[in-house]
Length: 105
Image (tube, rainbow, N blue to C red):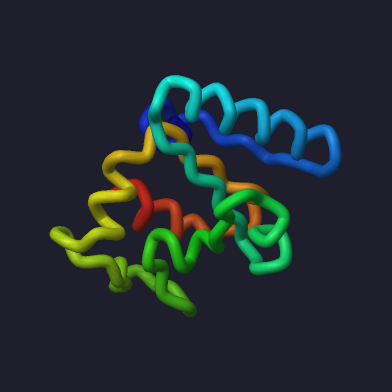
């Protein structure tokens, strides 16, 4: 639970890929849904059902202090994010602090 607990992971391949796969498997074993996001499309393609953080959270490009998420409150994507038990952002340090503020709200 990346955002709920306040723990941020910065992952590198190949050991990190094995750790992420083990985390995903553990969450799926509890019949919950894990999501792996990345800051770029190339890294997102390495993971099962991987998406870019900008696409998953509706983050605008470029992001400024008046930006808001492109996801409506009652959409299927919003419900999926609410039901997700584990949020992992690969290369989270590459995101702007404004992006983290949008994800957190």
